[in-house]
Amino acid sequence: DNPNQGVTFPGGNQGVPTGDPNAGTYGPGGSGSGNQGTGVSYSLSGRTAKALPKPAYPGNDEGVVVVKVTVDKYGNVTAAEPGVRGTTIMDQRFWNEARQAALKSKFNLDENAPAFQQGTISYRFKLS
Image (tube, rainbow, N blue to C red; front, side, top):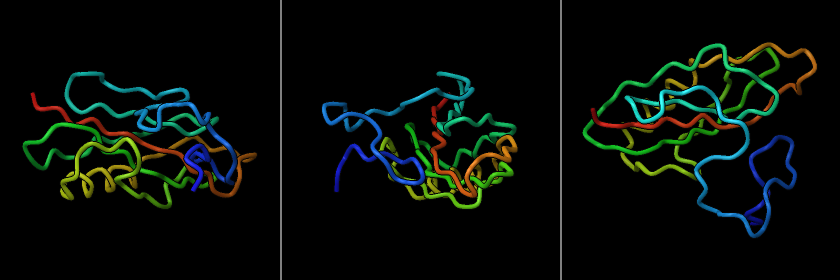
């Protein structure tokens, strides 16, 4: 397993071998509310978010759940896998809420995009 392969689809080298394997973000981030409430950011090359719903807050924990998403050329999230690299909360309730929110997310239509494209959506859970 080569740690610098990345999450792009189809596969390819992403990142550098000397980079931080635990980096929480890479590439251009999406919109989010920073340290207030539940922030949402994304990494999906060449796409803009049309809807990034915030997940419900299921418990008394703080941290980040990173969800690997597959998006079709129409901008629909067709698959969501929570708990990928960068995740700091192991509570399955948070993973389930993040997955449900990711599946409701919508990105821009891109007729020139591949049939399926992979990226990530990160959900920051912070107690208020």
